[in-house]
Length: 523
Image 1 (cartoon, rainbow, N blue to C red):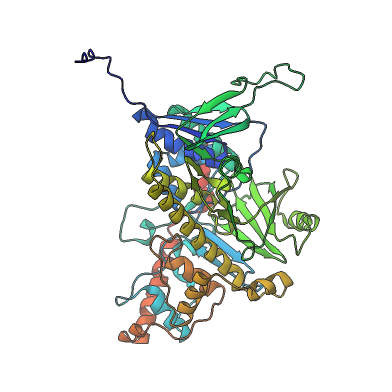
Image 2 (image 1 turned 135 degrees about the vertical axis):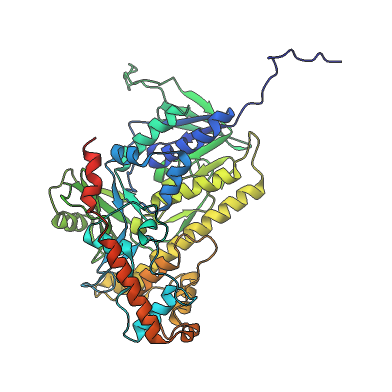
């Protein structure tokens, strides 16, 4: 009979060891989320990054789900905005996407309220067809506040539109990574400086990564801290945040690539910061260009500018020149060209390795979804997190299926922007004539016949988002929901006009965006 262990000597099972390879926004988002949840349970989280490897730094504009992510992590909004030079965002203004002189706002938050038991959209479409309704933006508090430079956080009164304000942020991506790093290290995450020079594979997938030493080519120390000769770092779970290189998921495990350049052919972006606006609007601008589009993102300390384009229709030199000519204010750095391919890994999770951020896939930042896809990948991972043993094939297959569906639905939303255009340039005519994915074709057909919009399960973009896009870019709609006939058109028009009046009254209670940001400048 084996002796019983004495009190205090019982060996506790070790927690899961997670190794995150790569820093930047994706790496540190993973570190702060996993550190908060795993370290208190005895787990270990190590992040490996090299100061010698630059990050892409995309993702300065976000969408409202980031607030849920921050709430889960206990991140204070004021501290976050102060640290990152952040500003508020109420939506995206699309300029020239249908025709050169037209624009519309894709707002966050709710548009209108139900009328006679039917969604506002159904009654508004019927009234607009009868000439009894204004443009959709008139009924969105967020759209009108964004255009007029006003902002307010939601108030406590649940009956007011001011209590339901939907918003997100603009922020400096490099500062955000630094902010998250401080949060993660305070939670017990270990940062390891160095370049991964070898990936060791095994039956589970990745067995370990080897980090280079810190010596110069002549063998002398380079003075950088926390380096060890060919340090071997093993783990139970590896998170690939190595950007477009996809060092683990593709370089070592050959997860495969699903190419979407047929539907989204833009393959270059030029980025350059410029001086800050005196009175920044709380919106992202997406401005159509002859072979792509241009973004403008107002932060408190600077403005982010970029030009996404297709190299088959415009050279890099031409794209840089167009961006520099369009900048409002002084350029603060030299333009930086980023080359990319649109698509995703065929396997986001392979063996014991999960790809996040650019290692998982890329879609141009037209609807500010880059950071959301990192967040979504993390949230699904946390739901299916394995222990120290291998994850079951069912878990891995489900994760890959869910993430593929997320990417596909966002892809279709982006493709719709290009498909529904009436611009004259060759690039745009080609985009309008190109075949579209089957799921998008179904959505457009449903909208054409009666203005119906259906949200698929947990699809990111809801009915309001699709309505803003489809009506903003003049998608064809024939007829309306027959149930609208239960309410006479004049009564529906009266109710719609009342909604506009409530929005107008609410707008008057929102201070200027610059005033909302001023308190951060005083810190």
